[in-house]
Image (spheres, rainbow, N blue to C red):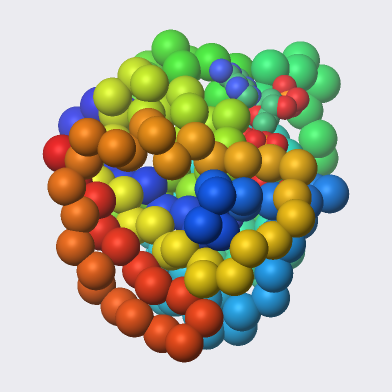
Amino acid sequence: MNNKKIIGLMACDPRGVIGNKGGLPWSYPEELEHFRKVTFGQVMIMGHKTFESIPSATLKDRFNIVFSRRSQKPSEPCENVIFVSSLNDFLALSPIPADKEIFMIGGAEIAKLFLTADLLSAFLLTKIHDVYEGDTIFPLSLLQDWSYEIIRQEKHFTIYKYVH
Ligand SMILES: NC(=O)c1ccc[n+]([C@@H]2O[C@H](COP(=O)([O-])OP(=O)(O)OC[C@H]3O[C@@H](n4cnc5c(N)ncnc54)[C@H](OP(=O)(O)O)[C@@H]3O)[C@@H](O)[C@H]2O)c1
């Protein structure tokens, strides 16, 4: 598995809020379109809670690697889903085909896991301009030593590319 570069792909408000009550705190169709376009046909890595929040229609067109420690896995909504129970399990997976990109899409628990283990080569982070209430926070401090450029500026959000 460690033959590929993994890219973070998430969206947060100015304080790092990414989620509320199991879903996104906001609704910006253009931002979701960006997510769908970038990940279409690619590999997505996510935590179990994020997996539960994504419609099966979206999961269907991507290969999904889901982190969960539970021995009883939830029923899989489509065949292109696999569960891993630890980082070591993940690192032991077979190499991903060279023509696929791999995106770590969150949530906060899995983002912290991958950033702390230094497994990400780049991070596409959408910063939503408005402030939202939320119960799940992405610690922006984990990217403080990375350099960044703005790759897209919209009325309600700006997309940054971080590298290190
Ligand atoms: N704005 C964004 O870009 C964005 C992106 C993704 C998610 N979100 C939002 O964020 C929220 C979910 O994020 P979250 O941080 O609460 O949860 P999460 O990271 O999506 O999932 C957490 C789950 O992952 C599993 N897990 C965590 N660490 C693990 C490890 N080391 N090994 C194996 N399994 C592990 C556990 O599943 P088990 O309980 O099954 O063991 C844990 O309960 C939702 O509101 C979602 O909508 C927002």
